[in-house]
Image 1 (tube, rainbow, N blue to C red):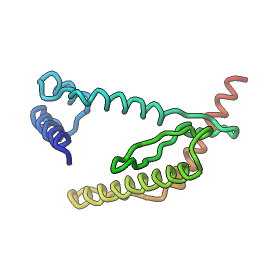
Image 2 (tube, one colour):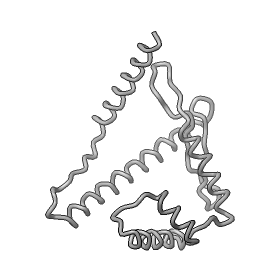
Image 3 (spheres, rainbow, N blue to C red):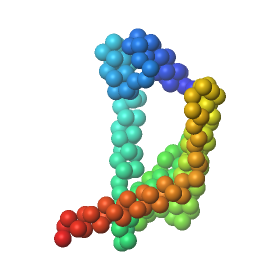
Length: 165
């Protein structure tokens, strides 16, 4: 963990203790940290903030295909330039070689698998830490979720078409 990450986590713990909260909104925490002088932008943070805003905008770009399904207009792939891992973005319709597209899909799947693994570990830990509470289960099969999202997207498209008619 980086020094900065460690400091933010310590500040968060202090804020939670000071406010007597069990949980908190990061926006409220930032207000507290800024107003109390505990947190501020470092010179390198401006570029990082702008980079984050740009990458967020690229990730949020969506298009509809001819079947009416939403897809991300821009995809990313992590490439190594020397020892540095650099995210490269490409337009899914106009750019990206077959190799880049394949790497992008594999990296995305690996990231999702890692998130699922961490979620399973989190649930297992909460069950272990609170054995007196009803035990939770994390289902890692997302086929029904994908089908539900697809059905909701189709229904929304149908509603829009009916409203336009």
